[in-house]
Image 1: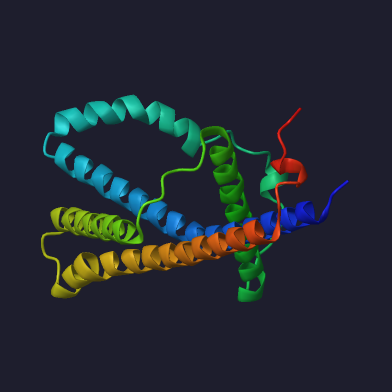
Image 2 (image 1 turned 30 degrees about the horizontal axis):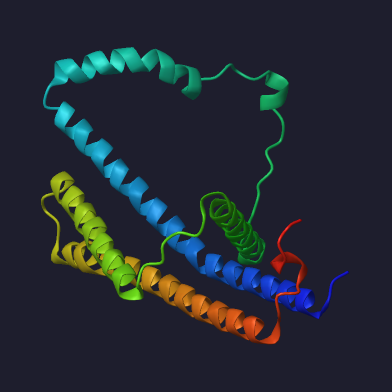
Length: 218
């Protein structure tokens, strides 16, 4: 049967899992924003390669001839029967009240998935090495600057006539927003770690080694 120490351990475990879930609710938007940023950079790279290929028409024409038959299969699928095409179209109108609940629900589900994956990773390979908060901020700042300036460079290559407002947005505002999101998530994670350490200290003071999962397996 569970004794007093086991109940304390179980309660502390549930609280720490809840704290980890809070951490992932703040990490999820950061990961999504960075994923979107990487997709944008990849798109800029693709467009840049295309623009460079335009300087050699023979090469791009040969490439289009190879890709065109495959693209037609997706762009021009088999024509649907006339009965389906003649059906009355139904307009769908979405309001803010319809969209926000789905966004919040997806946010919560993604945070839960992140928590589960992190727990599995810790269970299989052990807890990762904890970096000092200052080091995390430094890495986040450097990565934000690189991402923002890379986006600025790609945009400048595609459109050399960028205005000063574009330089400010891409070169300063984008890195600042990325770093602010990272700093907020890292700050929440730091507070969560501190609270978990405090809980562990309280548990160690109020329990003994007689709890079920502190005993050696026979």
